[in-house]
Image 1 (spheres, helix red, strand yellow):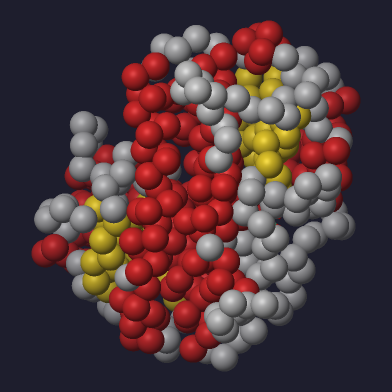
Image 2: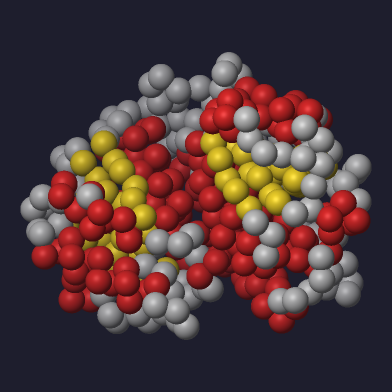
Amino acid sequence: EKGGFDWFMRKEIFEQPQAIADTLLGRYNNRGELVLDEMRSISQEDLRRVNKIVIVACGTAYYAGMVAKYAIEHWTRVPCEVEVASEFRYRDPIIDPLTLCVTISQSGETADTLMAIRHARVQGAKVIAICNTNGATIPRESDAVIYTHAGPEIGVASTKGFLTQVAACYLLGLYLAQVRGMKYADEIRAVTDELGRTPQMIQQLLDNAQQVYDLARDLSSINDFIFLGRHVGYPVALEGALKLKEIAYQHAEGFAAGELKHGPIAIIEPGMPVFVIVPPQGRDQLHDKVVSNIQEVRARGARTIVLVEEDDADVEAYSNVIIRLPRVSTLLQPLVAAVPLQLFACELATLLGHDVDQPRNLAKSVTVE
Ligand code: F6R
């Protein structure tokens, strides 16, 4: 049933090109417009009136929500907050009938998330669930749903769940932009085309898994790992660190690269592995700023593992290991950048002799608050 793989997790990582393709399938009509067919009691008029979006989720799904915030605000200009579900309800959040609550849950049964959406609905907000499990409690209690079509995820550590959540969040962001007026029509068309090409990009990374496996072997005696990212690379850094904690039981932290100088750089020691997700080269300065961060940690002796797009030569002098990513626009980069980090965690945990699919102290769905 693991299809020749040693773990469900590894199998699920390798299923991601198909999972993304399935999640995108059938979402467009023959005029190239997005059609989301389970909007149920949320009308287009409701979506036009929304003046605030609040995303609530836990763990990996929360990181997908962080990615979504960047994309949704950019495409729709609607203010968008993202919060861990367990914090949301207890701080008396400001929600009203013009708030759209988006919840993300692979299982659809996470208690913290369920309580958060119940709270949002009592305040009159409409709730859209992004969920991988047909008919689960969270989509049943929501006003609308976008199902990710990842297929069952059995490994406790979420992988294809995460990538398909990110893809579904993009669909939602593009749909909102479409319904609310196509200010960014050209960009939206370009993103749509590019999204369609991401399965083959992910496949390309999977074909190079051996490079990441070799890296895991080289780093198998290390107990502290740092992950840096900026913009949408920041949640990817957090996700990379979470995967290592969950299954390899190693201390790992993710930081916003720009925050480094505000404290975390003090912990860098010679030999410490620092994974850096570099934004694509492009119109803004993000790329150059992150390249400077690589220089800064290298100057303090860090071992830099740099995830960077394929034709970027700016990092070569400061990288111990370069993991090449297919060319993709900044907002979509999480769909590719997360993959080597998943492979790394899976391989490291395997080398350390852990039960990758059933890590200690964790359950696949957390049904208590
Ligand atoms: C991480 C992981 C957890 C879940 C979180 C939310 O690998 O599996 O952090 O992402 O418990 O679960 P769902 O998405 O089922 O609500």
